[in-house]
Length: 293
Image (tube, rainbow, N blue to C red; front, side, top):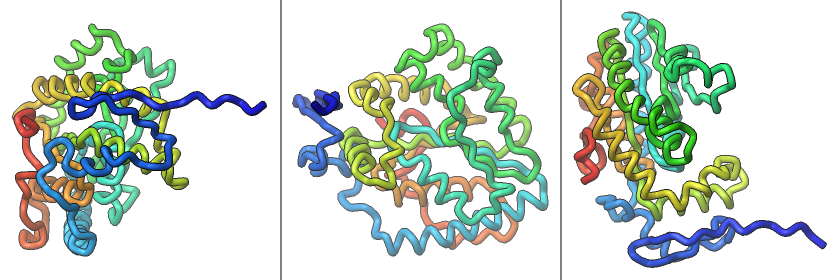
């Protein structure tokens, strides 16, 4: 007899209805597909045209190369954190930002689960070790804000550790600002049906199936818990010196363009071409906890 495979189907409360979602079923349910883009109050009915996206992206990437030359010449430092739910598009946004930069000076940090030694250290220590040196552009694919989201939701930290983190993070970030580092905190927000669609796409794409983890499946039924932790994180760690920039990311193309534009607008680098930057879309990008309300 063959080995019994345990079902990963879960019952979810979606728009006031009980729904069964099975990520292993090759057919994506209509109730997911029909509402994915509009979920989470996304303001557009269609994704940005690919040709328009690539044309705008190239101009912005040219500006990012200018930024890198400027960093090298001045010794200035840039650090950006990319946070958001699973499948929000953090990795893709990082790739779009760093694709044409010198990898020796533009560094992506995606830390694994802490080792036993790291667990015994100051919580922020392994992150601080990755901070940029003179001339560097460092992009964190998740960051110390794991302790404000996945860790308390999944029981990986104590309530005391969670509460302590919310008080300590702004203190650390005040030091970062005092150091003169250009510091960006991005939260990429997606709707529930969009997350389900992206999980399903990963599961059935042989080139992306590695991205879908057991943790992702476990998190499906904890949407409300993650939302609560997101809202509190944005409220308690959004400061004048280290503000959160929130991006509606159901359309990855719009999200990437707006995110890069935001960074470029914040820096006064040599050779800056204002016309190439394009317009900020206030329907897609905003500041702090009030943007999602």
